[in-house]
Length: 598
Image (cartoon, rainbow, N blue to C red; front, side, top):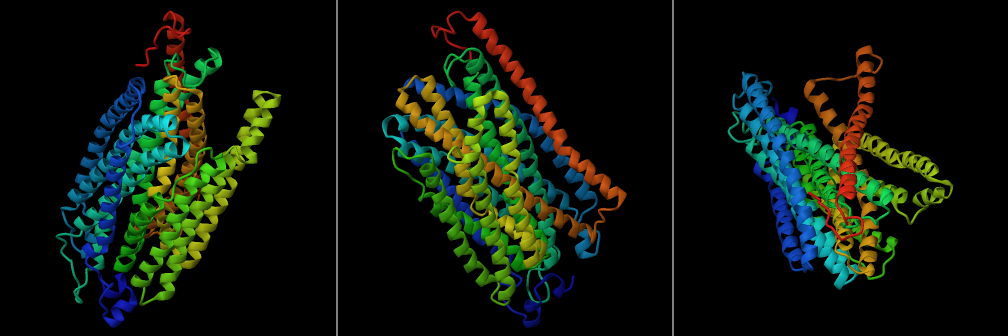
């Protein structure tokens, strides 16, 4: 490969030093340091969380049941997943050993070690994604009872802080393990390459390209866990929720989370395996995928390869600062509670913009025009993420008209509630879609496909604090469940209900954020695939291409149908079991006998 082909023309013309042809360890030095900061922050938050009391023996018993159920689900899920992961590892090992992709860079037969490289990256991505989900679940199922105790003894403001601290452990664990894994394996993939340096003593662009190619398997491993964790956890969550509510609230006319309902523990378990472990794995994949896509589209330019790593690292530092801005007062309204969480996200975003400006000015000192275009793309992606969250909040928070209109529709019966709810849900897609489209078009005009990839990195840069606001929701929900099952005073349930209502909105906001970032990341990965495959144009009028488009448009409906049928099947089994217990266990309805939640 010629010097000009992989490096900035400025670097070649002037034979300049830093940041041209940076050593791989220098490219990821900042990201490695910041990933360490994230993991240290997670450890400190766990220590801080442990300082809060766990409450009565009954509360602890309920919390341990929830954690035991969540552990049992994830162990079973990971057991089946391990077989799939090992099978794919073997396939990658064989394929990349027999036909090494590095042959296209060195003009020879390639490096037979490519199979080991690709396989190890895949395993690392899968293991780290699963580990992040497991760690988040363990902390969330410990924070729930501490949140209940705080709501009982210390009030709304402390309870909010405890729940958010538990969610923040998930956020910083995901970004810490994600950035550590992708940075470390990028460096490892550059070791023992035949063309480590070129004539100027710089790291050869071919080496960087080959390393990023191997790194794609890391994203594939993370995607594998995300797919199964999100779908399996989501099915369990909704099945348990439907089963508990239909029999308990509708048929037996008992309150939500009533200890007489045998499905209440399963309902609370579902919040942790679906909305904590599942969402964590989902965003772990998007986070590392955006970095890998941007590095791939850099085409061996050391400066552009370094940029996504450095921005992601800066985002962690900004998220740490943003965490300390979250807080509220006792008796706060829903809007005030939401603003309490928004403060953390907004402050983190401001710091990211400042850090990004410094990074761009350092890396693109030779080409400030290109640098500031990329800064604009990072800013656009960051702002787009915030706007998607705001749009989602508007349609899901009870403080605003859309959700209130669904309540008003209840005057004429349940049928009109369903119609209004579906209609509001469909309309809610419009603004996030327009925001994403504007982001794609704007960044493409500024800096092409690489600019779009950097917009995805910018959107996900504050994931540490954004995911914390999402993971906070299941903790608050569990806290309310424990308060009800432990039969605490009504004022405690009022406090946890306020936190739970906020959590429902933050969960919806998190899902909107996840989908928006996934679109940008997917588009970037598709562009990277086109680049590697040498595809220049795609004719939508080509019958083969159009057939693929139609088939792809059908797949969401197929997958949605399969998951809904699975929810129905699982919920049906729960409903039958709950009905059986109410019919056969004497005194259960009256509260003199204990339900069998196992």
